Length: 207
Image (tube, rainbow, N blue to C red; front, side, top):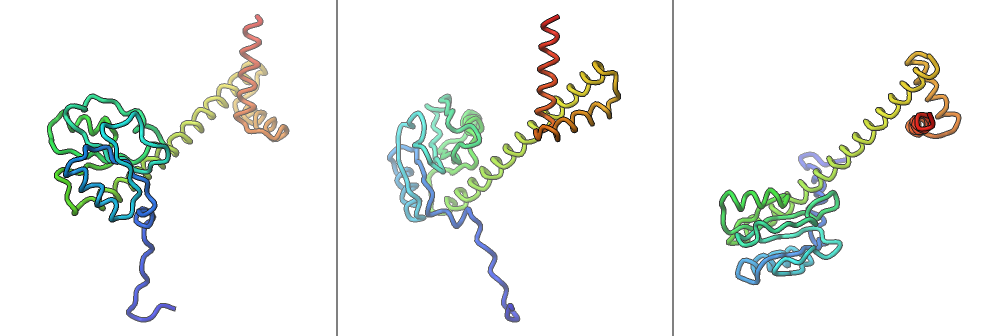
C-alpha cells in the first residue's frame, strides 16, 4: 500500500527509456555543428554513424536520421524518408527561408534542430520527433485497415447486388446468403463476395 504523502513515480515513457539503444545516422558536414551534434548523441548513449554528403539511403535498421538541409541540396529527393517503416527524420537547418522550409516539409521531418547546434534542445527534439513518428505510423496502420475494411464492404455490396439481380431476392436475403456461405466454407464474407464477383465476370465474358 502506498505510504501517505508519497506518490507513485509515473512509468518512464518508452521513447525516453529507449534512447541508449537508438541507432542514429548523422548526415551532416564534419564542421563545428556536426561535431557538436555527434558529441551530444554520444553522451545520450546513441550509436551513431556519420556521413557527408548524404548517401543514397541510411544503413538498414537506423531509428533516427539527422539531416542537414542546405541550400545546395534542397532539391535532392530522399525516397527512404517516406513510408511506414521510414526512420524518424530530424532536419538540421542553419538558414531559414521559404525554400528551406519547403524542403523540410517535403522531407517529412518530424522535428527541426536549428544551428548552431547547442546542448539545449537536442534531447527534446529527439524524443518528440520519435513520438510524432510513432503516432504517424499508428495512424497509417489504422488508415490502411479502414481502407481494407471499406473495400471489403464494397465487394460485399457488389456481390449482394449480383445475387439480387441473378436470383430475384431481396437485399437482406442476399447478405444473409453471403454470410451463410462464408460460415459453411469457413472463410470471410469478403472471400465469398470476391468469388461471386469473379464468377459473374467470367459468365459475362462468356456471353
